[in-house]
Image (cartoon, rainbow, N blue to C red):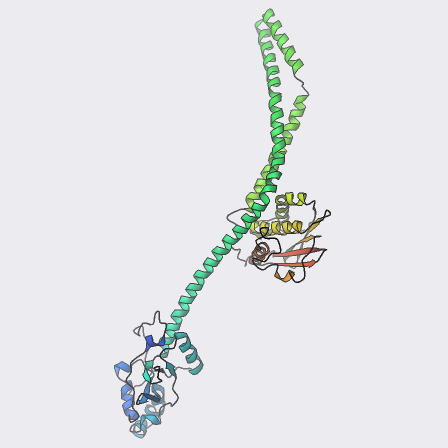
Length: 446
């Protein structure tokens, strides 16, 4: 007689979408206490019991224990004269009087936890299922529970992955929203910054337009006099000479020198406008996760130009002490957002007329360090640990979302870097951003 453990195949009952243990219940006819060991062995050979590792012994609905294939093989069928010695004995002599028992209304998770705590390796038994009165209801297969748990874990993993994708999409929208909010706060000042060069470009063009008619009349009179000279008409030549003399008297040749200066100023103003628009374009890029090697000092200068009107309005001076840095591979739009946020916050923290922001850079230990320090009102000690919390802000309602520093921290950490702050009330605050110079293993957030 071969009572080896049954082979588990894909023909086992489906366990998909199982929530309660009752779905895995097998209505197995139990052994009685009068059943012999030989009869128990025959029962294991029944096709209905082919997948079971153990059979229950029940008396009047009460579970007495379980007998396992493993026990029968080990103590009876693999021993010399085992059948002769044990075959006629009651099955209760070989049964486990403390079988693994589970309530029929148990959840799959609870069943899995109990099985994990109770069973040994290798698995040699299944479990008894009891009804709500504690009476025998059927059997359950350990591997069915494990497969159900595996499916549940897979489902949970898919749900977590979907939730993670939604979270990343929300985070991206949040970053873009904060960026747009920052742009909204800056747009009035930027309009002024653009309006200044635009004003003198417009003025220069108006002056140039006023100058051109006189120059055109002088050129036409000279051309007419040349034609009369070539034709040999003395009377016509005299008239055209008088026209040329009048045009020369009405036009000041020195204005051509002014015209050159006007055009130079105009080109300078257009370049300023193009620079501001380019900085705004870089700051508001949709492909914010695009990574490239950039000059960190160039990003700082761009952030200072965008925040220039805030600095001017608050009469804040900026000193930049740049150390030697190698090109940094990063997402320029994201790092620009971090720098602009730190510079804007520093300017807004200064409420006196001797404001100063010091920006220092250096390389240290494989990192590019950027320190932004102000001499503003500082941050209270009880507030400092919370400044990177989402939606935490000390600004009045309507003046801050509480997301700026939180998003800065997310961006810096996503680049494999760190950001920290120290502050002294009424003396100022210092933020330090450390970005790794080697980012081959860093995934920039989308």
